[in-house]
Image (cartoon, rainbow, N blue to C red; front, side):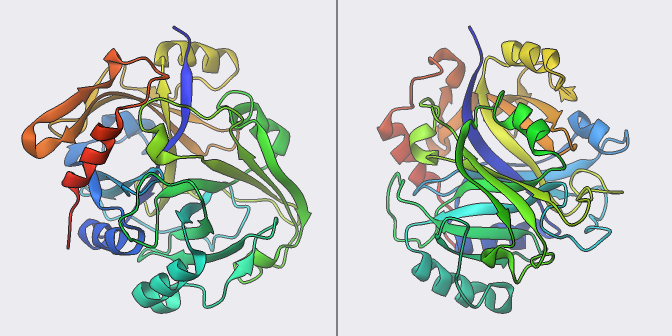
Length: 354
């Protein structure tokens, strides 16, 4: 079969205190359905960690109302460091995670109540006139909140899950060769150059930028697509200075937004395409990798033209009702076939309630 890229599956975020961050993400973003939570060595990431094998705890969490997941990562074999310089918009790599909400004002009130001064006090407008605001978690990881009308269910929480991210790049056309031409984010939602209102209060916000928001003309339909919904990637070039690599002098699992994960089928065929186009696998599990007791996946990593770390995940087995021992062998399903709605609705029984 040929390869299929369903779209963004998750964003990987490294934190200093795993339990505190997971609790915050449950309260703030409703990310309360775990798919795995395990401590393990990470030999796959040796090339991202100066050749050393680190040990980390990782937990994949989802909001049942809709949106993509977050893989929360915290190293146990070393103390993670923050950036070695003050990050600004347009620095190279994933600068912010975009979170969806059904009601921006309700979510703003909720975030202010949870975070206080770590949340913007006022709403602003993005480049196409959508109300938005930014907030930071306990480790200063940056999140942007935007409204969405695509939802799977409603449990009353004011937030959904992830619907995209902002990535700093040095050359827009080179970035397009990966994100548009291979990963399938081929629809230009906006292409704007200037100084922007929504970034005015952020570091570097008074500078000039080229911002392009990309979406998928043909989003994936298989697996969790109906729950995760439409996603987008904003590519940004800083025009008044040269962007610096966000993980300069640091390694994977140091504090920050460490990778962007895509849900794929046909990893072998995708690997051949990537190799041909100059984006060959930086590392590869070669086969199914166990993520805890009941989740197995095939993982590979590539770099974008500025070394932003991209994870490609082909899911083999996932828990549906873990407490009852109900699991799904995803490989036996057609890539375009969505999981049954009853099965997706059953995930709510895995919710963690504080």
